[in-house]
Image (cartoon, rainbow, N blue to C red; front, side, top):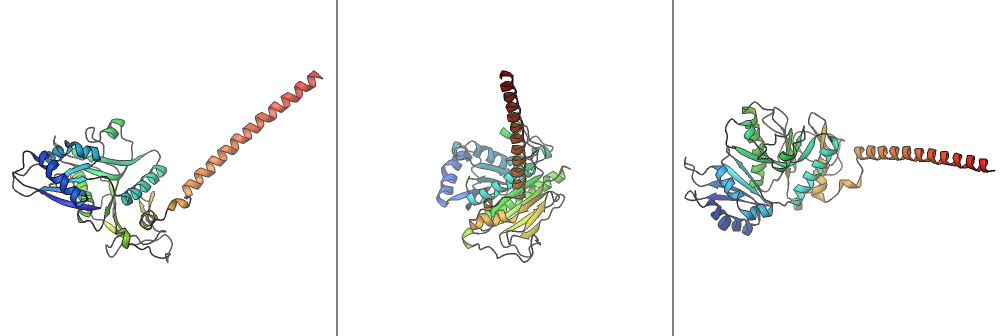
Length: 319
C-alpha cells in the first residue's frame, strides 16, 4: 500500500473540490496511493477548516463511487482519504471481526465511521475517525448503522486498527488516532475505548519464527520492528508494545475476556490458514449440534415405535 502527502495551496479556499478532482485524484492514481493525507501549506489563521475540506471531498462523486473513506480531525488539522483495498489488512480485520461476533453474540462488531461530535459541546463536528474493527457493547440502532455520522453512532468499547509499518502516512494515521480519540473522550469525561493497533511488515520480507520455547506466553516488545501490537488498555494514555513472534501467543484484551491471537497475523503474512484447524468454540458448537441432532433422532424413533404399535393393534383387531 502506497501513501501520499498532499499539500493544498492557500489560495484554493474556493474551488477546492475542482482542484481535488482535477489535480489531487490524478496524483493519487499516478503514485498508486491508497491513502492521501491532505493539509494546507499555510499555517496561518486563514487556513481552510478541515471540515470544509472533508465536505468538499465528500461531494466528489468519483470518491463515492470508489468507496473511499474520508476522515478529518480538527486536532491534527488534517484530512485523510483512504481508498478501499489492502487484502492483507482486510483478511486480519475480518478474522478479528468474526471472532468478536462469535465471542460476543449479544454485542455488535463491525467497521464504521465514528463521529466525535457527541463528546464536544459545539454544534460543528470537530472530528470523525474510522474504526477498522470496533466492538459496541450495545448494538447501534439501524439508522446509526446506515448513517453513523448523521445519527451519531456511539464510540465503541474496543477499537482496532491495522497498518503497514513501511508506509509512513499509513502508520501515522493509525498511531495518531488513539491519542486524538482518547484526548477528546477524556476531556469530555466520557468512557474511553480500548485500543489495539497492529503493525504489519513488508510481506515479502517476513519470515515466521520457529516453534515457541514457551507455550502461550508473551512479553512487551523491546524494539518496534513489525509485526507488533500496540495496546492501550482502558484509562491508559500510553501504549504497551508487544512483539508478534509465533502462532501460539495471544494478547488478552477486554479485561481478559477476548484473546487477540497472533496466529491471525502470522498466518496472513505467511499465507497459511488457521481455518484448517477447528477452534475450541467451533468444536463446542459442533458438539451442541450433534447433541441436538441425537435428540431429534431419538424423538423420531419414539414416533416410529408408536406408529408400529398402532399398526400391530390394527392388525389384531382385523383378525
